[in-house]
Length: 289
Image 1 (cartoon, rainbow, N blue to C red):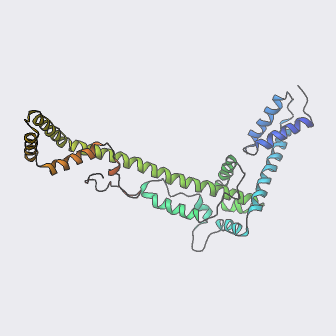
Image 2 (image 1 turned 180 degrees about the vertical axis):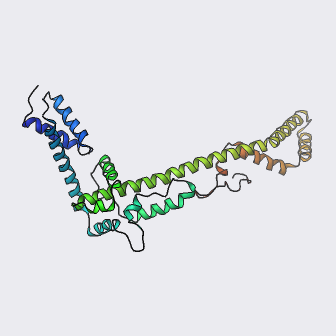
């Protein structure tokens, strides 16, 4: 095993700097450094040596990210971000606290609140341009850090770039979660509506089973008449008489179209063109097109 040296410290630095692009926990970063030294067959230094080095490198990476975000912010965006941390006139809390509060479980009865929330978020700052090139894992960690802080704690952060990065990370996460909740709610509603439509279709098929059997019986009689007919003229006359006895060509044709429509096993005509908050399947008494 080689002794820990300046070369070994450089190896740890390169490893930790790369890992710090996606990791924040010092323990994870120290473990990465230890793994690199182990693979290189280098003796471990004192834990305090690794701890100081890792924390210094972690701070270096984070500082670069804070400064990177800060230089991308315009005066208008900075003013908007500062506004999230102040209580507007006639409001009870800051917009930042509103970011951390959801309308409750995403259900049809709360969908209007979720839609209003999405509109509100859409009218805030677009967090993606300032956060470009920062990994998703890192943004998720920054968002978790911001969510755990109070407004007073954010305002006490001396480096504005860090404060803005935390707020932007949370804003980005909240926006994505709001869209995901609405999409998932829509999918659940669609699945529920389709299942109800399939049940309706099954009921209609059962309801028209007698008509279907009657039409099959009529067809059988028509075929039997065709076999017994002495001529085409005689066969046609007898078939017309038979059809007239069963209600006439128009009525039988209508019954045939109805049975054929429900026989296709397509529940789509029974799916209503309604909003997510509609509870009924609408009028399903008509035939599908």
